[in-house]
Image 1 (cartoon, helix red, strand yellow):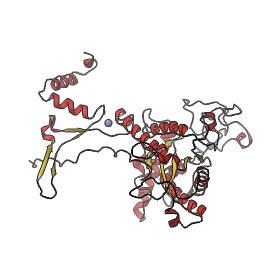
Image 2 (cartoon, helix red, strand yellow):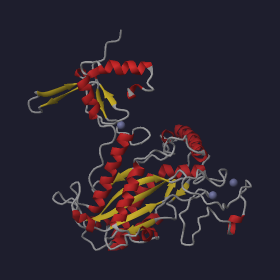
Image 3 (cartoon, helix red, strand yellow):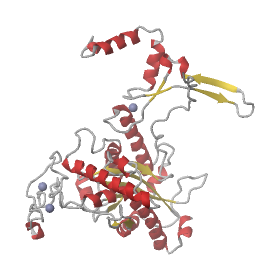
Image 4 (spheres, rainbow, N blue to C red):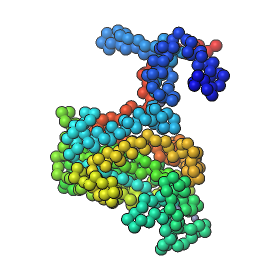
Length: 431
Ligand SMILES: [Zn+2]
Ligand SMILES: [Zn+2]
Ligand SMILES: [Zn+2]
């Protein structure tokens, strides 16, 4: 009875028809297979399992034998706004991958990795203009957004105040919005976001070089002793730009017998943390101009780079963990990991409420810049901004929200969706 409440006449008729069909049992077991997926993929076709040596067909499956002639597969979408069930499953996968590599003792990753030097790092984006900020109460108790002092006493060229005495909490829609949208450098924000994966790639190369330099070895000699493994999650800040949280671990050179050996060089987590900071501060990338009317931009990470050694002797108190540069206890890191796994599987900033004014302006600027880049690519050989406009939902970020190096830990579940390979059914001949 409850089921029928609020259903349209057409839907009610469909439900009745479904319930009275003889293949209801098989249909229900298909539905069960995709569990609570909101948008199961419908596949039609067939596949054969063939003995390679003899060519004999060992088994055949065809969706034609299923109710409605389709087989259902979970959609695998990571966004809770699209499919709560698949998003929830992905979140669990991310947690396992991050946790296994940090603590070991799960998913075939040995417990011994917990003794490897491990650093928890946060790499932020630089500022592209002052934004309203929701602050945690500091030691002095002040939570004001941007108190009036020094050069914040001034007005911007558009006559807007460069200070803000308000206290914003995390639910305040003002948080993350620019003090002056006309001063905010939207193109630079978007160009940085587009090249953030390249900055990360350069960071990992620089870190490997600095490790080798620290050991007084060539890079290839250092590679025989140590390997950098990492897992990272990209998180959107309120201002609509991502920053990276990463677990960075040192291993030895893996072999078939031991995929997770201890590093064969004496570098502890504190030294690794310092090298991570140095590398993050040194990395730059000169982003090409969007078109002939644009300028090249020298990109780097923001000044708020943080890298903390993760050690069993650190204070478990969360307040102690909040101190800049403090060592982190593995349990604190486990709590962070749970939080970031949630972020990786969460909705995009543009999901749900249609975004705020700042996000709409980011998207409008992105569409405009992407259009200019496409026109420029018609006359140039290179198209460094190819496909930019397709990432409007992501506010121009094209990377994955959770990634890892191959040997950090187990593999993240297959990318969505992972249907069985079916041959398409024969097409009816055109009439
Ligand atoms: Zn789904
Ligand atoms: Zn403010
Ligand atoms: Zn202004």
